[in-house]
Length: 72
Image (cartoon, rainbow, N blue to C red):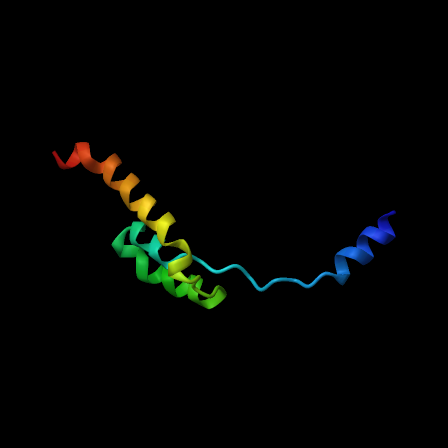
């Protein structure tokens, strides 16, 4: 059984490393943002922003909702 499972796993194509959502870097403190971007750029390809636009928009809305009391 193990041999069949191993052979099956090895026969599958390995997808490229996942990208990162560059829009999420805006939530990193400004002092660390450029350094973090440099690190992830070395290891990952930025994902297509259009594919994750809704996620980034929801994150912005949530961050705004959470921070609203401190802005008042």
